[in-house]
Amino acid sequence: MLYALAQQGHFLLTWLVLTVVAFVLTMLMSGVLFYRYYAHPTFETWQRKSNPQFPKPAMVRREVLQMLKGIYTATLCPAIALHLVDAGWSHAYGGLGGHSVAYLVFTFFVVWIGSDLYEFAYHRLGHTRAFWWSQHKPHHAFANPSPFAVIADDHLDQLIRSAPLLVIPLCMPINMDLLFLTYGAFFYGYGVYLHWGYELAWPNAHHPFINTSFQHYFHHARSTVNKPLHTGFFFKLWDQLAGSVYEAGPAECVCASCSIARGERTREAFDAIEKPDYSVLLSPSFWVRGGRATVELDPAR
Ligand SMILES: [Zn+2]
Ligand SMILES: [Zn+2]
Ligand SMILES: [Zn+2]
Image (cartoon, rainbow, N blue to C red; front, side):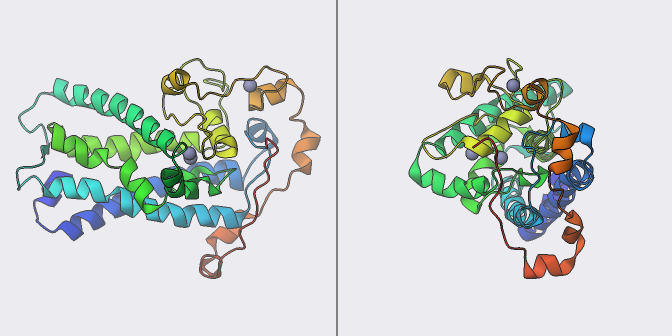
């Protein structure tokens, strides 16, 4: 599909189509969760919210605008990969491209595990070097993020995060639909879960291997320059090896499960929480004139 599109020979058209497809996919995935868990929260859903507070609409607006930057930047690398095929540089292919179905499955796992280690290492760099922190810092404007924050990144930061979409086709034969969907749906989908702001009963924050939504919420709330904490994506392994994990006993742990167990998520507490009216996000004037960005409330700090 994407390979055939690039055969038309128009680079800007390929980039535009990839951007539109990515925009629709990402807005749908983030929007559905936002509608259910932010615009229409219930006491039962709120009990499993990592940060009991809801972000202000102005912050959500800022997330979405930053996300748009992330989208058109992220689609640049696969567009280049598709157009380097004719020059003999890129091994991107469409269909089976002379390879077996087993090769498709094999490449999926190579992309999954390889990208997870790469994203961990690059994200960690963003928290350990001043220059890379300056690029990554805009993602941390959101201490209490919503599902729209997944790729709410600045240009250079997102370009490097999406570089495997170019580097992988330069290194090995890869089906471009598989690669684009793995990043655009599978990775982005997991990113939506990580920025959901809510925690599942399973896997919960204390799962031994899986990096859950709590770890990424905690990352936004507490990790900063020279303080890498849970910079991993799917697996906890890399952070465990690097020693950048948050561990706390049931008396202090700020995850939803432990907060519920301590009796902190009561109906009274829910009633006292401010539930912002997110319907302003449907008003064009709100997007044009903007909302005053307010400091996020974070009880974990
Ligand atoms: Zn970070
Ligand atoms: Zn994030
Ligand atoms: Zn806990």
